[in-house]
Image 1 (cartoon, rainbow, N blue to C red):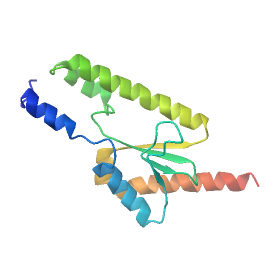
Image 2 (cartoon, one colour; image 1 turned 180 degrees about the horizontal axis):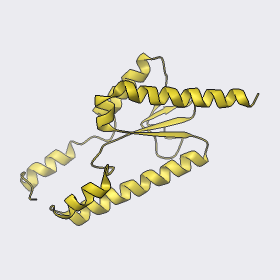
Image 3 (cartoon, rainbow, N blue to C red; image 1 turned 60 degrees about the vertical axis):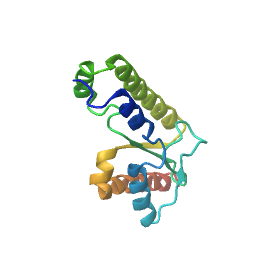
Image 4 (tube, rainbow, N blue to C red; image 1 turned 135 degrees about the vertical axis):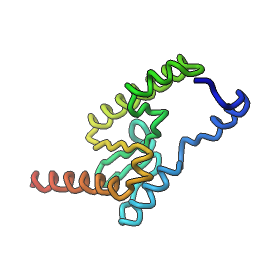
Length: 148
């Protein structure tokens, strides 16, 4: 599979990929805000600087892009092996996946609930994503009442 863009076009394309305030983040943040949930953006106090942190409930939410975080890796990896610069992309995405796992473990160890959403799920099923967050909040608040 060869690239349809010239190296210069590809470079420009890649330069415009954002790390913060992406469409998927904004979509989920607006939906949570509309429901009355207040949060921190890119909360640097905890590992991984989650895209959204509900500090009141210790919930860390990550909005992951399918490509860069390796969704369906067993399908994507063989496709990448046939592409240009395959070693670079396989290495990069593998590292991203390992990093995501490490961050999840560190946050769980510190008592945080970690929720990761794929970008397409946020865009196509925003309400369901909000419900997942609300269920986590419900579980956390119920656990708090059991301790009393």
